[in-house]
Amino acid sequence: IGNWLQKRISEGKFQREDIYIATKCNPSGVGAPKKGKHGFDVENLTASCKASLERLQCDYIDLYQLHWPCRDIPLFGPASYQNIRNGRKTAVNKGEAETFEEQVLSIKSLLDAGLIKYWGLSNETAYGITMFCITCDRLGVARPISVQNDFSLNDRSFEGDTLEACYRFNLVGLPYGNLSGGALTGKYSKSKAYEHESDRPLNESRHVKTPDFQSRYMNPMALKASEKYSALAKEYGLTPTELALAWSNAQWYNGSVIIGTTTVRQVQECVNAFKITLPDELLRKIDEIHEEFRNPTAYYADSKMAKNASWLKE
Image 1: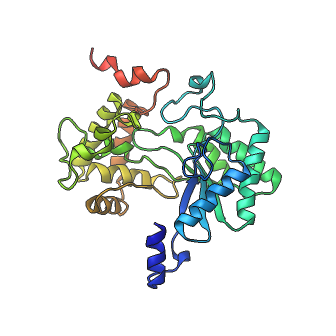
Image 2: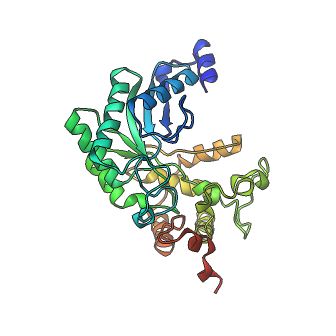
Image 3: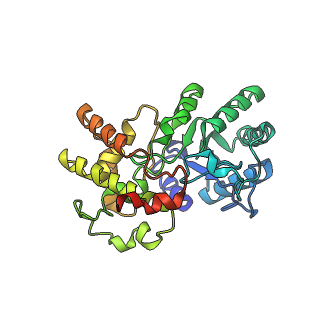
């Protein structure tokens, strides 16, 4: 991206300030000069930010995000805090007030140095949002402006108390996973109601090549819900991708919607989705499916139960 950016700036095609760059710091140390998990301390956060700037070949980042909480919190699938009773192996703290202060002051150093313009959170909860915002207010530091959480037709858990925290503290949603890892495109459908694109064979898709990566998106209940959403899309002359992205884009609390593509055709389909306004009747039918399949990519008690879904076989 850095090479691409510099080439086009040098060619006079645009200026750096014409585009908005967002990236993250990973608390597991991936991408940072120093390996190993950390709690977004000033040394690690600054080193990670500067490393990103070096790769991007630019002077500042518009939106710098904390990739996921460094405290003991269930992540990527579990929807209940009870699943973290014994802590989390990658956690470095227990979410004490002083740990939020340390992280906010680390962000302040980046803001003061002009390395970032704004900052945001990711994979965060109502508790984390609240603690970060009141800590910012107490220390006189700019609040985060966004929360990048997993969100789709198959996972609307963000709409609970996390959304209230965002609303009260004026943060916007910046959701990822809007296609539920590809499940909501219809390409994994057993009914073959939606033909997979010819320019990318299904055996090249993530859940075929790496089935253990983000496997929550392929929970049996999630696939059944995806089938219903695909059929609904067809009823209204839309592709499943268009339905899923247009719906996410229509939600008042989202400031933008993140997409992920691997072919030109996918880019075109995703861009077209943002030009679509879904009628109220269709939105009501989406909510009806949601009442039947509530957040099927998440598990509330046991991940193996959710992945097995024995009740579907009875």
